[in-house]
Amino acid sequence: MIGPRILPANNESIQEAAADLERGSLVVFPTETVYGLGGGTLDESSLASIYRLKGRQSDNPLIAHVLDIEGARSLTTGWDDRCTLLAEAWWPGPLTLVLGRSGVVPDLASGGRPTLAVRSPQHPVARALLEAYGKPISAPSANRSGEVSPTCAQHVLDDYSADPAADGMIILDGDRCHVGIESTVLDMTVDPPRILRPGALTAEVLQNLIGSVEYTELHHTSASPGTMESHYSPQTNCLLVDVEEMRHRLSNMTERCVVLVSNPDHHEMVQPPHTLLAMPSDPDGYAQDLYDALRKADSEQADLILIESNGEEDPNWIAIRDRLMRAASDRPV
Ligand code: AMP
Ligand code: MG
Image 1 (cartoon, rainbow, N blue to C red):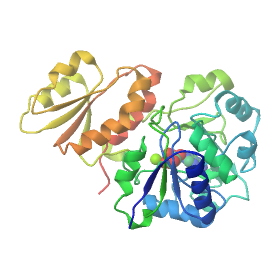
Image 2 (image 1 turned 90 degrees about the horizontal axis):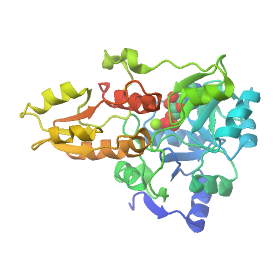
Image 3 (image 1 turned 180 degrees about the horizontal axis):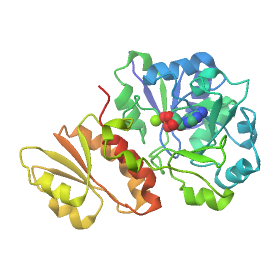
Image 4 (image 1 turned 135 degrees about the vertical axis):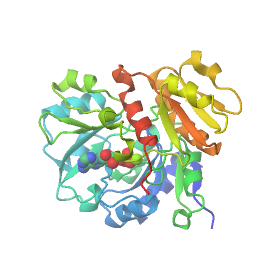
C-alpha cells in the first residue's frame, strides 16, 4: 500500500487527477474554504465512494462544484434574478446556493433531497481541475465525518494515510486555504432565503444585495450543547469558555489544558503545565488558522482543550462561533 499521494498542483498532476475522476476514483483538491474530497456529480458510484470513505451519513447532502452560473443552472431548477445577483457579486467565492435538483443529477448527490447545493470555487487549482474534468464535481470537506476540516494537504494525509480505501488517492497540494472555514450556505428555495450554515459571507452582506435573509444562530441552544450536532470536533474534550471560566480552569493544575486565546492581553494567563496557542484577534485571521489550531491542540494529547470565546456582538465572528460551538459540543456516543 502506498497510501494517499500528495502531489504539487501543476498541469500534469491536475490532468492525472481529472483522469482519476473520469475513472470513478476520488481526488482531494484545495478550495479557498477547505480541502474537498471530490467525485463526479453525475457519477453515482463516485458519489457512493465519497460517503463511504468519509463515513458520512447517506442523508447528509453534498455541494456540487461548478465553474460558473451556466454550470450551476444545468444542475438545478428555480434559478432566479436574486441568484444571478448573488452569483455575479460573489462567484467564484465562498457562497453556496441551495436550489431545486434537476432530473439529470443523481439522488445521491444531495443525500436523496429534492434540492441541490451549488458553488463556484475561487481557488485556481479547484478551477483548473473543474476545467480539466469538464463536468461538475461533488465535494464535501475532506475530513472524516464529524472531525476537523482540513486546510492543507498534510491534514488530509494525516486523516487517510492508514486507510486502504484511500490507497493511491491524489491529494492536490495548493497550499493553505486562505478563507479557512466553509462557505455560507443559502437556501434559495424558501422566501425569504435562509442561511443554513453561516460562513465567510455574513447575512448583512447578502441582505444588502437581495433584501431580507433569515438566519437563526445556534447560540440559543448552546446552554445544552449535547443537543447540538457534534461537528468539527477534536478527539480531546473541548470547552468554549469566557475569560473568567478560563482563569478558573487554568488554576486547576490537575488537568493539563491546551488553550486557544485570541486576546493578546490574556496570553500570560496560560502558564505551564498548560500550553498556549495564540490565535489572531481579527476574524479573518482567526478563521484561517482555526482548523489547524484545533488539529494542533488535539495532537498535544492534553486533558482538555479550552477555547476563549470572542466577538460576541460582531457579525463577522458568527461563522467562527458556530464552528467553535460545534467543536465544543459532545460527540454522539
Ligand atoms: P460539507 O461539504 O462537508 O462542507 O457539508 C455540506 C453542507 O452543506 C451540508 O452538511 C449541509 O449543511 C449543506 N447542504 C448541502 N447541500 C444541501 C441541500 N441540498 N440542502 C440543505 N443543505 C445542504
Ligand atoms: Mg464538512
